[in-house]
Amino acid sequence: MSLDDKAWCEIEYNPRLSISDAADYGPKWTGWAENTRKNTPHLSNVAYGDHPREIMDVFSVKDAKGAVIFIHGGYWRSFSKDVFSWSAEALNQYGMTVAVINYPLCPEVTVADIVVSCRKAISKLWHDILTPVEKSNLIVTGHSAGGYLTAAMFATDWTLFNMPITPFKGGVPISGVFDIQPLINTTINEQVRLTEESAAALNLLAQKPLVQAPFIPLYGALESSEFRRQSEAIAKLWPLSEPAIGFADRHHLNVVEGVNEPGSPLFEALMRLAARA
Image 1 (spheres, rainbow, N blue to C red):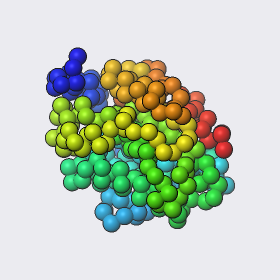
Image 2: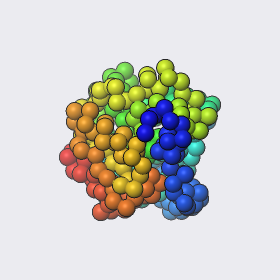
Image 3: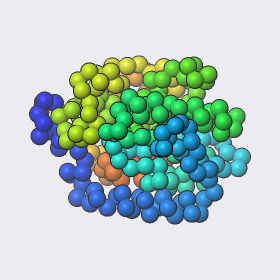
Image 4: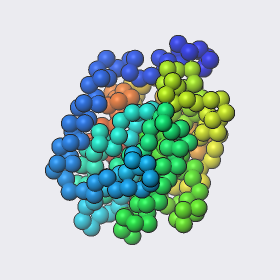
């Protein structure tokens, strides 16, 4: 089908239309997250900018072997760090500090603004929070919109933030959309407000990464053909990317739960990157 076909784009890029229990995930994840924050010591609501949503939580572990930055999804228009605190649990148990980033949402801001917010958050972590060991073994991951933002962090010139050009050991975007132009033809754009010009400027498939570190795109094997295609496309185009991984029996929402499941393809990809330190 054509990317100009609005009905087709809506089906391909709006996972909630094909996941029968999609409405259950937000409340379930929020409950998990509340339990994590209740039972896990952490730095809460660390400000990295002036906007009220420019805050993050940092779940540190003693004598950490490294750190993972988790960027939440929600198509840049929903969710928050407080829904995904549970992403720190298993990684903490394996010796990794985890920072869960919050950011302003569309339509109040643009996707380009959110990219800037994530850069500021990572700069704050680098300069003020992470230990030398954590900085030496720093990995970025994120789900859906966070998958796009993970890749955008690899297309960033970190020397502008007084950081190394390659501050990461690797990145794992989960079910990202890296060419966001097709979203113009979906109801998602009612809030994201992309134009042809802004979508073209944000197209990561047309950019090369500045960060020279391994990159492992991952998607749910049950996702739409377009979500699969997007991960496979960036894997082929970006020089240091490994082939995209299809996580068996997972759809667009439950694929991210693998970050908290030791032995899952997602968790193992993160730990494999961490082991390269």
